[in-house]
Length: 636
Image (cartoon, rainbow, N blue to C red; front, side, top):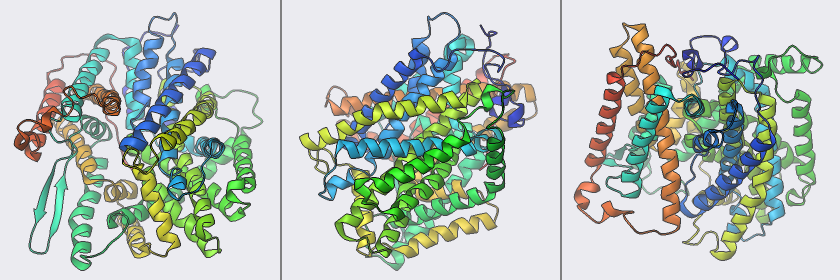
């Protein structure tokens, strides 16, 4: 049994070196983790969340994060169990998130094979999922210590911290749990009235037009984004907003002014943003390479170690990482789908390693829900398809190889982001990375056939690409691949994005947050900025009293975590209601007073009310707790 605790230490969010952090469960305490119960329940949750997200993603063009809802369910599973089962609960939520990540990685691109009028089999989907999932997990291992331990306090991993708060609050109870529930209820109510009842527009925008100027300002009316912004802080939020402002108030009007009749398969800023994200990732890897090499050497030197390592430092052996990469290379080379194309196999391993690291770092900035997997997939497809075309692999055969290779990279990037988030939670909780890595791959294996079966079933019943199952992301990837093979990709826009990334680095501006602002819809960046601004206001109010500041920050962090959890769970419910076409009050706001419910100013007012409630809730909190979450020091 572990000593009863009220909540996470303030050092969980930074303020000390990562190696000095004392986890919630001390390393000297032995608790169950990778058990028969956690494996069975974790695999079951992975299948459920993976299947649900496959259906939702192909039909509605959206997926919902699984980690936080799964953490709530996992704590419920063990609520009445004897002993402390918090590490088992963490294992379950981590495995569940693999189902959601794998679904996103597959549905983003592999249905493009169907859209290209070629044959897609369950065997192809399962093998692609297993190989891409393996790369995604093992490629996080060499950089885990760097991203999660050495960057502790600089990379916040907001959703991982929210999951940690859920696990701790659900186990410990008390005032922390009450605060978390208050945020959860607020997030649930906010999402239901906005997302289900449509009493306000969740994506309000204001058109800004002039004689030679045409753009718009948008804001995501999202409780979850506000929560993420509060956790990551004003600095990261400001860089994202800066990228969004450059994109929508400089690049979009400029392109429209210079080339008003430009016709592309994607918005021009998507190409620019994809170039910036790819270049920003490369710059980050180059800067971190000395530390990565050091971590790699440390892992190699520790292969023969007989003991003495804390469990929180134990990953799968680095020999497994090397062997796994070699096995994937050989198997993809021998895969009938790649037709013995050694170039494609080499590109798969290289691009997967690169974007696995990029994804793992981006999740540390903005969480998995906002991880731009599509941007990384676009960037990888630009490289893979261009090289295949240059080596005379053209026509339908070349496009098929490009889609399979791109799917492997997309799956590895999606899985890597989910794995990094779960490893951060495990680091905070005091779990064993090696056990988690094994458990996560078991979840990938368990959910791959279910996800593949649903993709094929939906195509058989509705036809993928039809109005019923639009598969918007896969359609986008199909257009990109065709554009490359037909020489219609605007490479100059990609180069512009790369140039922006280099400019940011030379000006000592964090590249990836700025690149995210360029690529993502503007509303996401402004939504995060609202939360960051709230954090800044509260920090200023209590900056003269360190004790008060820590207590208020704890309240705010728990509320923000609750908002994220509430919206995530409600998003699942709303999506299910939409799938089953339950009329009831769904969409009620689109039938009454549409001039009010559809007005962007109504949405802005509602967001302001939520901010006021949040601010007042933090200020009025009278907790004298000595255990506080402190102030995240989020930097890219």
